[in-house]
Length: 71
Image: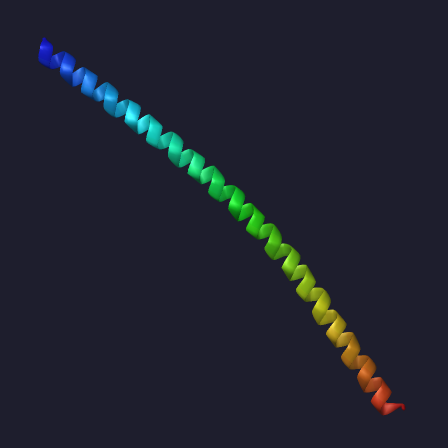
């Protein structure tokens, strides 16, 4: 009977440890999801900035070309 109680208590302890590890992994996952979301937002803003900069460069090249052709 004593052996059965020891085994049961050992399993309970293992279950407790596993639950704690699952909780830690879930917290870690949430943190990574938040970090990924922030990075994605930064990437979207940088992509928009790059598009705007490329458009400005294109416009300036066209303006420069027109000014060189018609001084």
